Amino acid sequence: RRSDDVIYNMCLDENINNIDPKKFGSKITKINLCYTNQKRKNINAELMERYSKKKHFVDIPFLSYDPKSQNMKVYKGLPIISRKTTKFNNTMSGRENQSVIVSNNDMLIVSKVSDDKKVITISNPDDENVSFDITTKRFNMRFNPGYCVTVHASQGMTIKKDITIHEFDSFCPRLKYVSISRCISVSQLNFIK
View (cartoon, rainbow, N blue to C red):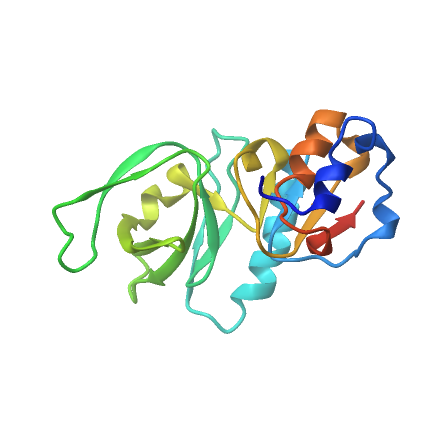
């Protein structure tokens, strides 16, 4: 099991609806979970604006045909989440002939934006042997910002850093369970309405 005893007990059927968000921290963190895509987009926009200051970035417009798409400021250090399973060519030295499979909802990070802002290099924070490039034009088709993801997209994740859960009162018991059980320790939890 990934969590400590407190998280485990909070997630039991008899306890999940008795969680009082007011008993936890209320800071916004770099990892956020929410219920709606509109909330996800708002939090991502706020944090991209905050953390892109004084950085070399490229503005990428939302895809007009895709309601889950959003305007993005893409810069080194931006966390991103994959929108679909895609195969890329590895750009790591000595691994150029190897393919990289990025699965839907994989969490990655932007490691470089080219000086001409036409190419974005992406890496996997959990695997130093993975790096690949994507053109700016294709970026928004494959990735969303990852400061905030929906609880549905977070399924399967283990989060080891502080997180903030938004819209918790809107969650059914199953979504409450999924959001809380991403953590390994109760000390990571923050809630914002």
